[in-house]
Image 1 (cartoon, one colour):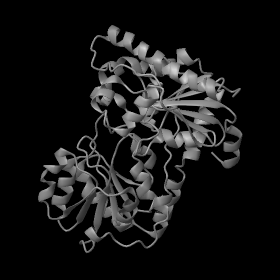
Image 2: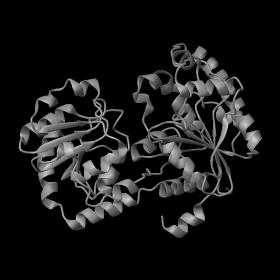
Image 3: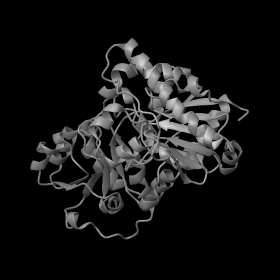
Image 4: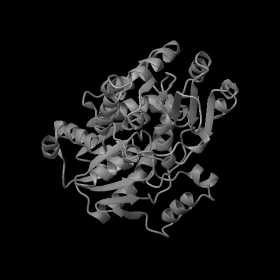
Length: 408
């Protein structure tokens, strides 16, 4: 979409309410927060934290974030905070019940409706305070607590945003396999950050779009001549690296072992915190595999810059098959050749990465990628990654809204 078209499609002067999984005070990156900031450039936005539930309150009383939410519920502090121009954050002032353990679906649905009503009451109070009217409701994967908000808040348009396949996680699966399809179906439109998830939503709602993924790439594009991190200085080349959480539910330990065994002369660097499966794996027995442990986000570009090639050795399962791998954009933004596992979500990167369907293809593709690397290819990778901005992704969301509600 060119700039002029984007300007014509921008929705302006609306009141937008965002609900979802991640609160504003989360320490980790959040798609929804980035989308909220982009929305707020042209609209008023209320970003609503998930309501505090009773079990979380009981178990985490010492947590400062829980304490703040409890004070809001007791009416001792105001839960509505101005974040920036046109953007507010709401800490709901109603406690909800912890109900995901309930196996009876009728009983769960009854309590879930009560929770939704409490949640909606808090939101309505904030809407009245701010004078929000004719809202756009944007739901970031919150299939339980926000299931009835379309009926309770009566938005002008309701949007369901799918950025992860939540039903692959046990917490969401039992009730979610019933509720999420219903929520998708009754939403006015669905938007997703990958082809796989858009196709999943389209099973239940024909008004479903892949709006791509935005990334904050400035930190990765401004690394010029940075020093090689001390803990990987002097490694034998080529240095092949991965940056991110080392989780066995997402990464293929056997694949990494295979590459290390097939090419013992290569240095394989894994940057990030390990789960238990990684900690006890045989990877630690390979002399050419180097673990750095977790690093501050500001340090990651220096590691990627030091790699000759970057990996994304995903294991293919329900968690990963539709997951948009933001790290690929980070790798490409630094011009690095990338070898990754083939998934439907990886299809958009097919022209700029080397994709393997099985572990046996990895060594050959790595050798090919290293041999073909050039200044021209590095520049093409950077240009491609630079197109994945939040401005472009939100422009696609606006276009999807206009398709369903041309008058907005």
